[in-house]
Image 1 (cartoon, rainbow, N blue to C red):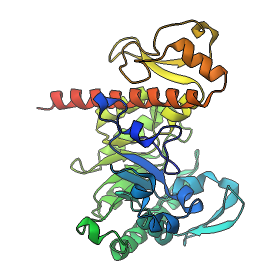
Image 2 (spheres, rainbow, N blue to C red):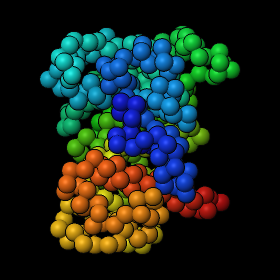
Image 3 (cartoon, helix red, strand yellow):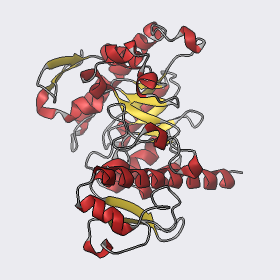
Length: 347
């Protein structure tokens, strides 16, 4: 799922998102960020505009995260209590407070198809005791999130126009890097009977093998008949591995962030190992080949490595767009291939 933090997948226009990669099917679902949209332009403005779908002209599914991870990332600018989190805006230093109820109210106003419970993401490394305390807070906040959601999910003005359809609320498993806490968190959240479950608090600096172990063990305790979502991962080979382990949904800023820094993902053969290409390198200055000769995206069909290097070195804004489009196509094509392989392998 491409990440559109401020209701925009950086440097990529919505029409392109609808067509890039995956046989021209484009991105089927994207993310927006509750924390950022709350601060700017404000969730009430988005609500007046008819919700985030209409505001950004995106008719396909969307997911909003709760803002918990972004508040966690503020570190020195936040104070956590059992009631919620007081924090200062990274934009202007103004003081704000997010409780589970407020996070849900903001997400209801935004109106994305999937909302997330408000959670606390513990730092890494953290002791077992600190992690369990944080996990307990996350579970208490999950219940408060659900209660508020059930009371107010029909309050948006476009509810009736949707024929009574409402958003879906997903839970978030925490527990740090401790298997026993991950198990406890998953089991307690499953008891809430939510329509989907995310695995949070990973890809925050721990070794990749630890990430993999936490995902594998947590999947054991999450129902297979509901979406299982790993938040904030990862490199192309990682998302392919996690999908084959049983993960249904993943998101990451990496495709567009890497593209904006001149890092492109390629394969020498379909399904082959992922190669990271730094388009800034001088060796590409007169290379007439496409980025990836196995890729059929709109960038690889039209532009050479030499031209893309020129755009990046010259600081042309088009460079950010073309690099990002290719990387998004690479990710979406990877997942399309994996879906096909998994479909064939099922008995």
